[in-house]
Image (cartoon, rainbow, N blue to C red; front, side, top):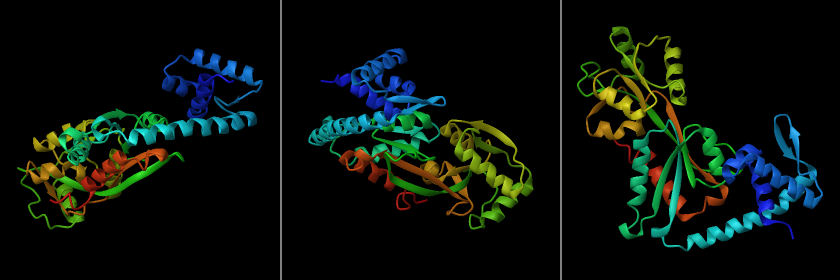
Length: 311
């Protein structure tokens, strides 16, 4: 009989595409994992991996062994999923990975709506964890996350997009701002008027954000040089800066809709926005039919929809 642990280590390493990522997931050292893989190769009398530049890839024999391991461990995963689905929701857990630059207040709204769908005594436990794009992909591949929220998408044949939303990007100001009282002006008129005045300062997300690249592109298209008063990688601090009259800022409407409704900040220009911002909810293929994941997707869709985002 083959050693179950050795086969599982091989399976995880093949899925991860390398020893470094696999050792992190398995929580063992790289030398120890490499040693265990060598033991498996010796017991099979086969070479399972070969070098491909700086990475490794499966040999022909390795691909064949991986096929058997995949069937074996996927059946084990399916058994676990079927059993967990019978567990009352009050004892279930759902872990959501969120890209570092996604606004937390938006995620909190989705989580709140999700939990309100259950009676208090039946509510599942929700854990939200921030991660880099690489971490999101790795943890989703190994199903450490039940789903991930991102504005860049997570592309992999093992993943499934539960929801993809396009929401308006709007121009915002403090509720005390005296310019642009006529909210019916077209986007070009209102923006051009602000720029021509030469008095406005801008609040911007960090350059590492995909959304910042979208803002920069908009300014470049308009051939406008912006005077930046405040820049941050925390969306909440940008909203506060607008509220404190530091300057004007572009935001996806779903990030500031609550503040606009509460009249703490004001939206100027058209409600349809200046361009569209994409945000997605992605899960592993094997999780797409899970009841909790589907319910979370319903809440995500509701928060992103025009029915909920009424100004």
